[in-house]
Image: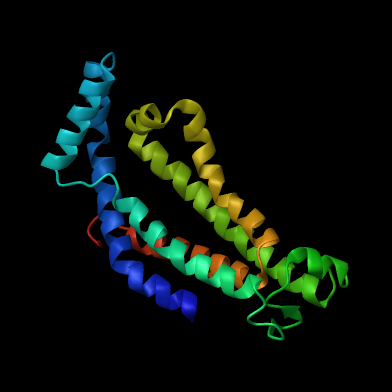
Length: 201
């Protein structure tokens, strides 16, 4: 419930981020032309891209705001549960203050607590796979403008970042892992809704 309240609170910013992303996709061909024109002068290219964004009223930072505003909520959850505040509370057989290593030590992968983590890993892997495919598709839509801005190597790595959530779930207390899993699933569903049609945002 805490996670859902946080995500509902930042949903208006997510909608704004979606509008910004669509606008950046629409402007990608113009950015590519500016890169061809001013490629040898990085400062002039930067100014030209900023001017284009200003003319079109597109904020390059809009997409970061939802994630930035969630960071304090995640840190609060992590602090509360890693400090033992919820000692004695559990999700099924897995203590909320426990970690995956604790579950492995107490019954192994398929023990009572281990199965809770197996379920979380399956959910995260499914969401990460969906996000990976969607991100690759969006980057392909943005074409050379996106690739040139990120660099070929970074452009290939960015879609894979969705799988980093698996590591997070494995190392943080279960309560924080639940926040991450719920928030990640919300993000995937929210993006599927917000990006389904250009006229829906």
